Image (cartoon, rainbow, N blue to C red; front, side):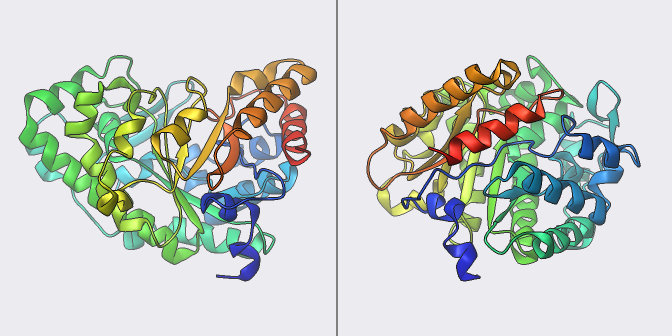
Length: 351
């Protein structure tokens, strides 16, 4: 790895090292709130944007350049990995993603394919190559994937859900089908992240967006082993960030393994806005990321900056040897004022 990348603020913080100022990047930093993104998005569908390397690279690079953040994150989506497995995916305007042939039975699981993402998703590799060539030499690129549970929930429910009835029914009522599904998804996610590393990313984030719907007992039994399997396969190659929402009661379980098996724990723990940052170092994370409520970015500028400084003050209380990366507690929302986002980044860099 280039020395400039190795000593970048972001990667130093991932390793638990001190930085001159806190590094900052923002989930969904490339998105509909930016005019530059909307202009490119008007040329194609959302899936078309994800699958066109030069367009995906451009929105990735634009966001890093416009905001001045310390890392870029590849513009992509969690769900296209499901298409080569045999699921039909569309994005409905105003409704979000939809799986037209959701998984409901063991036979459905058995029919899923497990192709090598290097062959089935070459557009991601193309975008990574273009982004890496376009980024400044000291700015890392983050790759990502959906965690096995979150992908399973989408695949079973067929789209968004409030109660996850179908997913929990399979998880608790048909453990054989659930295990087979998680095995396939874990293999795909692992191979996809390893491919992204080979293609040129410097860190990866595992998004478990929906895992907060589970009790600690169900998470420990039915989900955590698969998260740990992914982390074990990737950790040591690049830093691994794990992020979920509503996870306050689940976080200790990620770091509950004996010291000899702690390579199952992520390098960086992403904290949502419901949970105090301190929870991250209390459970044993060597680096924490987060956690400003993204809705605060709609408030008057002085409120945004005051809230950001409060997050930074909390982060400053972390023990020696624990790294810190400023982020939101979830992704930037559509119609967020761009000037507030720029002011936020400047505020963090001025800390």
